[in-house]
View 1 (cartoon, rainbow, N blue to C red):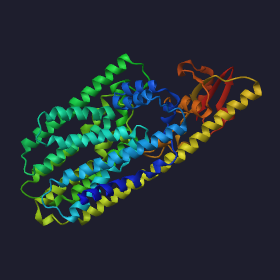
View 2: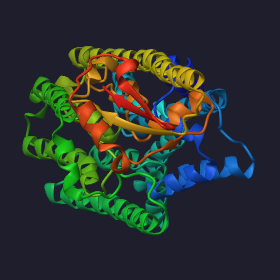
View 3: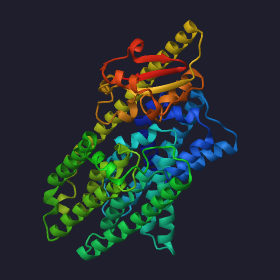
View 4: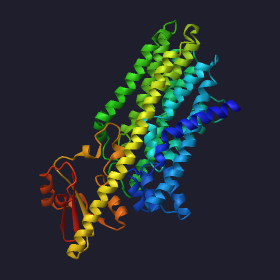
Length: 489
């Protein structure tokens, strides 16, 4: 019992220290929409995203008359949720560690160290870091925990276990669709560990059954999403544009970078351990590894068809950690090869470097968000002050705001051009999910946003001829009557 407590504490402390900078003051751009809108609005938004568990969170806030209507309230709620997330993630890591360890026959110290490092790489990476960024983080991580529990149940002798698994995975998808995808490659990995000598035909059957469960769950989620979007107000224009509208996102520079890094690490690990595979079961082992890779790819690529709002690292979680799943499977293969059973040194060094790399990335991303929060607040406060000065000088009041773009949006000024960092550094008065909301929150005033199609064509053409590289409010804001025309540069 003491060993299990120590194991949990190691995982908890590693995760806590990795994400501890998120406890400092910082805001993701979505925060302003939450602060400016009612709980009813957020309930509606989460329902059309087919995330009713997140909607339930805002419903409970409404039930207890708790309103997140200020930055200070948001930060308090976020920090509470973040701490709960770290506990849930630590439990998830603990379950992963014990689930794999319990299926290993010849346990030794190096195996345990190796498995601990692999477990931490699953819990500390670019995808998980994005989950932690949002106020709904503990709900997303709870969905991940349900995914792990579903994998545990898959190999238990229980009545109606498949019904229970589908229910748990469905709730997981209602927390956040991306975390449910982990069920697919990880469930196959556990099956292969438990059934080391399984025939190709039996493995293929398991692959099909796992994919059926997963696609059935995501299919129900998709249907509910469609129904909610049919009957509820459309609050997010990115939802249900077109299936083919997402194809280009799969081939964006950031996505290709994620594919390449994950695949390179995957094949490096495979190459290093290729000797382990050379025995009578070489064909089976190689096919099993290919199945793991294919399932990881399919598990996230189906989001092409559900018109997910965007494809950021958090959507690729099951693929980002595919190298960890491969190494977990290789542990069981080593058990069948006594000659290689104790040759963990090189593998431990490699996965340790990967873990250190992951920690460095998530720390850098946290710093980026802290810095961009200050930069963004300063930029919007300057806009608010500029509007106030105009009102005072001209004895008038600005009620409406219309947003425009210049010839070429300069995201490099906001450090958004860096790989993986756009979610952390997006300028808050650029995106529709935060533009008017950030100005309203930081000014403590009510402004009306004029729809893009109703904005002044002449002003739009004027701004399109400009190409600024930094803020220049004297040129980037034009006042006409009670409307401020603001250009994003």
